[in-house]
Image (cartoon, rainbow, N blue to C red; front, side):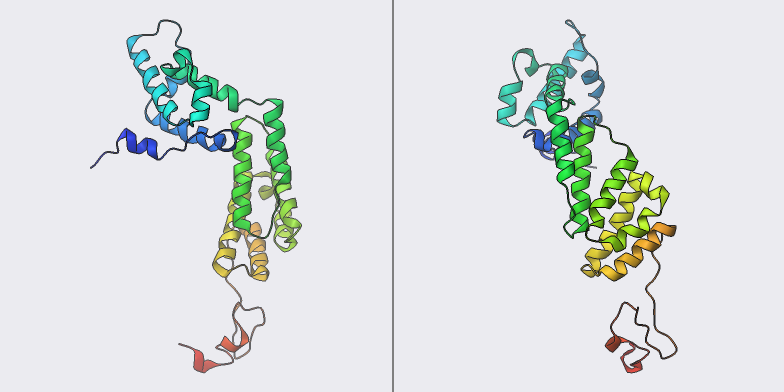
Length: 244
């Protein structure tokens, strides 16, 4: 089985450009550095005279982190021993971009407040998750119930048919992951049907009640059901000759 080289692995990691992509960058880097078994050396101050093995890990981690910094950030961050001390470099970057400073908090809150649903549920969910990642990056905590309520309120301005059934489900309104999964199910249906609101709203009711999507109503006994998902002209009950 072929192994992936460190160079190829690094090519798959994002470059830190600044505050805008720090939440994604820090998650990807934490995962990769843990994969390389360098996370512990970055979490503990090595002191002035670390052992030889630790010094090697500090150099390797500094190299990896440095390769994923833009030139602007590298020039402003890598000074002195930070070039060969991963702990020092990592700590400095997290202090610059990951602290819950007044500026960082206000920036994250403003972005969250400006978030709005413009009709595409898939894009909206992606924007929500991006905002939540920014909160997580600066350790800014909001109660799940508050986040769920805000998400529903933003969608309700344009699609109350979806949100009304969800509001009545207490579990959904207090479990962020479950709410996002439910909204993603509805978004997937929207994408597959090019957004047919009436049926998507019925699906929201089904998902909020038992987590399953009920099948669309059908015609039977030679009578057309107006709530069926297909048009009258394609109804087999009225036009049996069209049945395959």
